[in-house]
Length: 391
Length: 133
Ligand SMILES: [Zn+2]
Image (cartoon, rainbow over all chains, first blue to last red; front, top):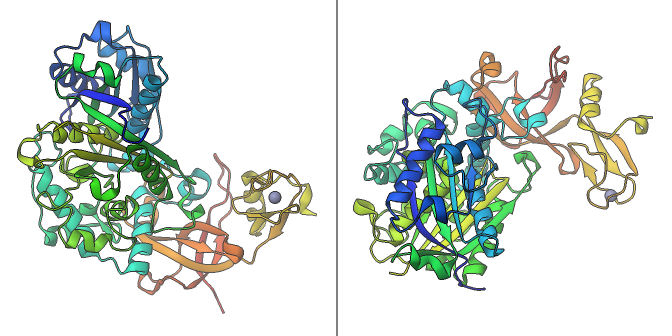
């Protein structure tokens, strides 16, 4: 099935990301669904949608479990059965993958996939604790680790092994803030200087405030269909031609290599092989920059550069908006924001915009192949999706 | 002998309360486990035994945590690292009783612990500190 479309993406939408004080999770989800439907007037939500798969990480933020039917109901979609997926920050990429399975199985023709997280009504220590629940309890949570702490342990190992610098990590933040400033849906729409990144307050050495993604509210949505019926809904479908998924030990301390995510390498291998492409064929990518070191490791694990050369890859300007392989044109988790359950499909939304020429000020000219990379927790889960446009 | 005890994380913390750093070894294939597990997942044998580890190891990476959840606020900023014991077995944990500026990857640290807490999950907390020669 090399390069053969698995499914078509015929529409997508996201809510505004940020501190959305007036919105609960279900309201945010409806905002994302509404944009998705507005972009696709040929879709009849009540008649066409066969099922809903929605990702959300934590019941703790809104003290709300059993969210799939609740979200489906509040979006007016009770005609379609709904299931929630959870693999920490990769929860909505998992929803997409299940959606793909359900269409490939022949059971469904049109599926709504999405994700949501409402985080900002909680204090930072509360949010830190809830996010931390995706780390191993008996040995990591119990002994006082945090998510910035886990990525800081990887950053220190990467610096020690390869000489990666705090400045190189800082450049990832500068780039993603530059892109976020061009994205009206982004949580933070302002540029930052390298000086400001490097002098921001310490969160978990060597990671500073500006090395960390944002605690945000937001939701995302996409409509996927059987490829052969996509043109019933849009003249400009985008095709998913590769889907990869990898798992690893939950505890970082139980993994052999602390400078690379095996789950990413596995997911990437599966997705590239399915798509019949190589890393050099990718024109635009959204990668999981929950921390700046995570984006540097992603360059390496996705094969954009060799192991250990991620720091130089950003220094050379390759992933800049006007570079050879623009990465995180949306602003990434760093500037667009990281409502964890929404992130995976928000990446798909950005790639959908890019491949259909709708990315406005951050449009990458002539892009045809896009990649989305979504990681759960400290790397025990990873999904890679490869999309192809018709342009 | 320790073999009568279940090869579980609960039992591992019981041993820790007694001042022992333990791991599990498979008597069928020789695989070693920390965290422990009640079945060898290399060969799926249940012929396991507890072995005691020397409670000193080498620091393989570390960080200094400045933003922490409520129950660790009192320690902020605190050092946190991953320590490798014999046979590549590892544990993560806080590093205490040391100047943060003196922490270096590769240094030797020893395991220490505090009595079990009263409420859930009723486990002791362990941490690492410099080896006293
Ligand atoms: Zn065995």
